[in-house]
Every structure is written in structure tokens, then in C-alpha cells.
Image (cartoon, rainbow, N blue to C red; front, top):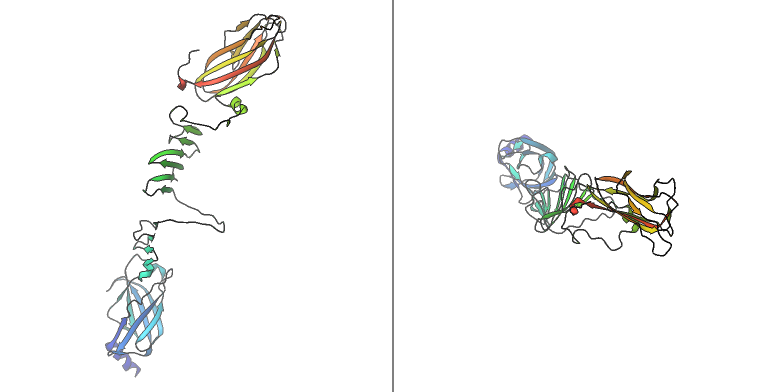
Length: 370
């Protein structure tokens, strides 16, 4: 009876997949296959072995996988059997056909496996044939394309990381306002389609220039529109130590002493010139009452910057002389030490409340004639 039944099945068995019953269940490859089995047009009720084979073509082709079921319960011709094939065979990169073998008999027609509609577009999520995912778009151009607003919130402080050699942020018109190049380690900010700020691989910041040559380089029109600082943002200490200006004030007098003709230090300052330029040196003070005449000198890095200035003896009245020196000295880029000294041939004259001011001017400010 069993063998006759098998032979009979070989000639009259017919199976049909019920419409819409092959359901993918992401993210796994499992789905439920539902079918209908008839003998001579009549529904079958039995428990039969069924093998499901996955092929790459509707005829011939390459067999990719196989799942065998020893006892599939068929009731009134209907059955539903869960199937799961290896992930690498159902990656969306190729079309697939399912071949069904019932009780050792291969049915004549393979059935193409297609993804259910909800697995391709679920509430605004689309997956195309290249496995690109689109949220808010049905035409994703990258592995993930999002059209619309997006909130990213890390409630457990695990951190949010982006790992890429190129990062670009653009506005609604797709004009990039920030770019990062991992190969050159360069950050660039733009506005109105033009690059305006950069940080290069050495940490140098450029404003108005994309190739800064210093820790901070600003390229802009001269004047107040170039660089503007808040009022009182730079104090006397910063001014005294800045590369552009150096100054010192002594509230007490300095007595010119020592061997006649020897120089006595009145004040000294060090200043850094960022590039070749000029130093304007100015020293002022009051010659003490009844002081002898003095000679005043300015040295740059130990070299006298003549000529020497002579001030005759002061009187005993309030109309005392106000000795002053003024030098314009060309300098190369670098750090320089300047000294204001004085000497006398007799006595011990004094200079009261001496002020020593040094100002640096680059040649870009215009020609300075010493």
C-alpha cells in the first residue's frame, strides 16, 4: 500500500504555495512556507517527508542550500513549515528559487523567493537591492541615507563615535559648512560656499587663510574690521610682555655711580620681533636737582646704538631738565635685549622716575627711516 501510494504520488502530486505566505523575518533568514498539496485534485491529509532546496536560477543553476523535514503534517491539503537557510545565501545580492521534493519526488516548477513588502519598506524604512537603507527616502545613495530630522541621545553615557577618513556636514542646499579630511588631518569651516576657518594637522588656526604659517594667522582687511578685542581684555602685564610693545616704569630715582666714564644701568627690557622690522626706543626721566651732566646710551644685545646723548648739569630751581632718548633701530626676527644706560665724569647725578618704552613695527607697516 505504501509503495503504491508513493508511485501514485509521483504521477499525480501537485503542490501550490499560497499567495503572500513567504514571509521574511528580519534580521534572521527564517520564514514560514505555506503550501497546498493535492492528489488527483483532492486535498491530501498525511504526514510526509519534504525537502526544500535553494537554487540560483529557475532551472539548472547552482544549489545553494537544502533543508529536509522528515514529517510534515498536511491537513486538508494545507501545511505551513518554518524554514531557515544560511545567512550568506539570503543576503539580497541575488535572486533565489525554491525547489520542493515531496516524498522523494521533485516537483516540476521552482518558486522564486521574494521579500515581503514590509521587509523592504517598514514605516518609512527602505532597503534596496544593494542593501542600502533609506529612512524617509526610497532611493538611498549610501549604506544609510536619512531624509528628515534626526535626534541622537546617549542616555547611559556610552559615547557617540564617528569613524571615517572624511566627514562632511552640509546645509539644506547641500553646501558643505564643515569638512574633515582624515588623510591630511585638516578641519575646514565654510560660510556662503567659501572656506573661512581651518585647523591644519599641526594645530595651526587660519582665519581668512587656509594655509596658516603660525599658531594663529588672520588674513583680513586692515583696520577695526580685522581683529577686534573687548575693552580691557589686555592688561599692563600682557602689554609689557607682548611681542609688539615692552615698557617699564621706575617710581624711584637711579643714581649714576661708579668709575667716571663707566655706564650705570637705568632700565632694561627684552622684546621679541616676530619678523624683520624696527624697534622704536624711547626713554624719559627728570635729572635730579644740582646733578652733574650725564651721557645716555642705548645698547641692543650689548652693542651701543649711538650717538650718545649729553645732558648738561641741572640747576637748583624747579626748571630741571628732562633728559630723553629716542632711537629707531632696524632688527631681524628674534628676541632682543635693550638697555638704557648713563655715565658721568664726576659726582653722582640722579635720574628720577625713568620710563623706558620699546615698540616693534614690522616693515609691512611701511618704511621707517632711522
